[in-house]
Image (tube, rainbow, N blue to C red; front, side, top):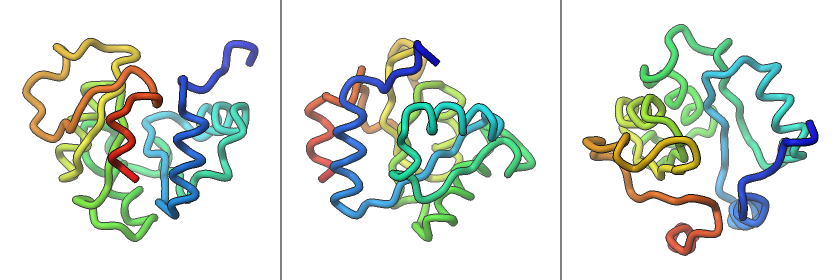
Length: 135
């Protein structure tokens, strides 16, 4: 718990997104206990409109089921979603769901994401100016 922290700029990004009435979901391959630990530990649950965990799908990423269920829970067409991902399998899952993706290079290099046509850009944190065009 003492090491749990938001990625730089994420708090402000979540607030701006909520103020713009943009629905948000988490689509994770993690189990609910781990998701709850993080979102409650960071006090960000109030920003989320839906959560899809490993327990909610039959097939994990890179299968599109996680992201398709999140889009359905938000009542948004997959093509109108924007996925934020930090892992190649997640980007592939978004591609398989027909969703564009913004990649966080917090755990992988940009080279590890080569060949995915659904990537709109790369960011290292949520202070990146590329995100200003989303509002």
